[in-house]
Image (cartoon, rainbow, N blue to C red; front, side, top):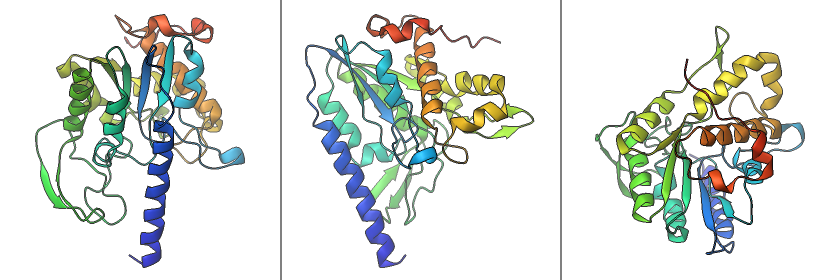
Length: 276
C-alpha cells in the first residue's frame, strides 16, 4: 500500500473517532431513560450530497420518540462491524454512558463479511455464531488480536448491556437492494442475529424481513429512489421507511420496553406482522 493510502486511512479513522467523541460528549439527561443506537452506516450516515445524500435510519427514528420522556442517542458509526465497533473502543464509550433502565438497539452484519485481516479494513468476523477463534497480528493496528464469530460479538453486546441494567434489543441488518426472481435477497447475518437473540433470550427486530417485504410490495421501480447508491445506503425517504419499520417492529414486541416513549408521530404505525 502506498504511503498516501495509509495517510488517507489514518485520516478517515481519526475523523470518524473524532466525530464519535464529539457526539459522545453531548450531555445526557440522567433523569430520562436513553435509547442508544449501535451499528454501522445504515444506522447513521450523512455522506454524499444532493441526490446522492446517504442517510441511516437512526436519524429519522428520533422523531418517533417523545424527547421529554427519552433521549435517543445515535452512536452508530459507518464502516464498523460487530468486531471493530468493540476493538476501536466505541462500545466502551456507550457503556460508560449507559445506566439502568436504558435500552440499546444493536444492528450489525453489513461489514462483518469482510476480510478478517488485511491492510484495508481488517473488520471481518468468523461466520456464524460459534465459539471458533482466529489469532492474527492485525495488519492495520499492528497488534495481536483474537477474532471471534459474529454471534460471539453479539453475545458480548447483550451481556455488557445487561450488566449495566439496560435492555438490549438485537436487530437483523436492513436489506440491501439486491433482487432475485422478483424477491429481495435475505441476509444470512439476519439469521445468525435471530439465533443469538433466541439463545440469549432478548428481543429481536427482524428488520431484514420486515423491510424486504415492504420493498417487494412496492416493486423495483418504487424502491429505486429509496437508495442513494447502488444497493446499500438509503436516501432520506429510504431511511424514513426503515425508521418506521423499526417502530413497527418494536410495537410487535411483547413486552415492548419502549412503548411508553413513543411520540405522536408513532401513533399511526401499526405493529409488524411476520407470520406467513
